[in-house]
Image (cartoon, rainbow, N blue to C red):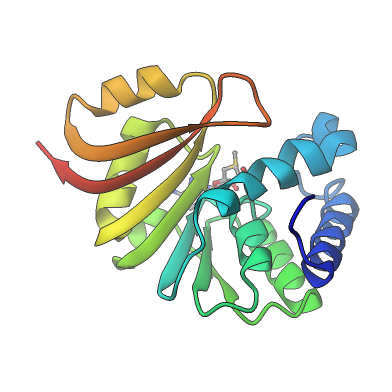
Length: 197
Ligand SMILES: C[S@@+](CC[C@H](N)C(=O)[O-])C[C@H]1O[C@@H](n2cnc3c(N)ncnc32)[C@H](O)[C@@H]1O
């Protein structure tokens, strides 16, 4: 992984080890994807860090699951002043996320065990989500939790164009689609300036 410091690499490897150890007990990633953990999950999420270097404020990772992409981005930015909040409704996954944060000594990350739609608005400077819901269902979450000048980074599969078209029926927003370099036809959507029409 180019441009990754030795300390970041050590943390990413520690994170991979913990996923491998916990995955038989709680499904953090599809078991069939475990042999390809680095490429399929870690490098997939690292793509976001090639587009954005967050500067201060709150980064909320919604439906964090095993911490993808929130923990990967928090690890890369461990010595920066952006705070990462991993929002996850599942208790056991939350225990896993807290374990990773503790074992890797991440001072910039914390976990909120709750449903996204039930927590107070976060006014986040950045939001990320991966494999959480189709874009039309994500839009109300973004409207609730993204600061007016914030950016959302959404990792989408091959259906991203039809999801965009459907979301555009009820919402206005700016969007940049960054083609995925790890999955054919997938994209990372950078979304800002959201309003409901
Ligand atoms: C398919 S998993 C994806 C996890 C991770 N983002 C990834 O890419 O591997 C979706 C996660 O979102 C969580 N989730 C779904 N709906 C949620 C909600 N309304 N509030 C909080 N978490 C939610 C689920 O518990 C699950 O862990």
